[in-house]
Length: 225
Image 1 (tube, one colour):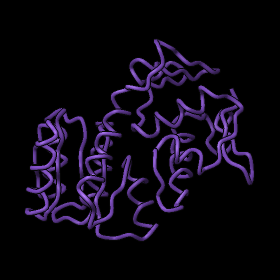
Image 2 (cartoon, rainbow, N blue to C red):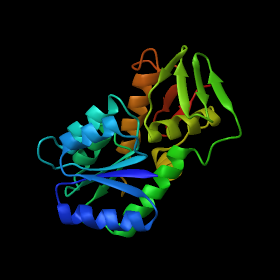
Image 3 (spheres, rainbow, N blue to C red):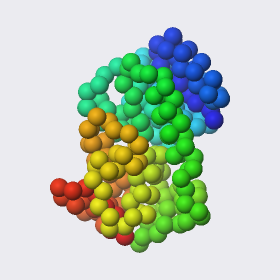
Image 4 (cartoon, rainbow, N blue to C red):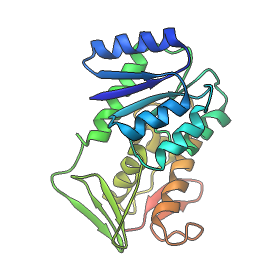
């Protein structure tokens, strides 16, 4: 597994590199957002750890540019803890979020969890899920709408697969956080709303009037099937 670590704090980068290499990962480093985009474009990484506040190009903009050509899982780091900053990170296409200062054990745990999900270790046995013009190839972790492949982030894919596997079952935002993310964001369940909205934009013909990913007002979300 190859990981790109990007942060302008060189001592922090050195520490993350040391700890991740001790876990058996191959680690490459960069110190600004522009370099991160170029490295992501020219190399195949299994995961990117990306700081928000950086020179040349900040992490949010860098993540957005990376999402133009790659669905590599992204963990964003920031010294800020405000909900708006977290949501901005998810809006840019990040899969996970960690606020500085953080425990290196937590970072390693999140890296393992995200790589596991992105690698599909929880895949079903060769199943292709289909509903109308939507289908999911769970072996390849690929979504297709009306014959066209749709680019989804790791978390977006995990979310739509869960919903499609359990049609008409209503999940609260808390349920979805626990199942898909595997831990709590301290009650910031708007993260789920952001991912649901992005899925509708990518998978629904008319996101304002969704056919598949529906809301049960006051309860949560479900897949119509």
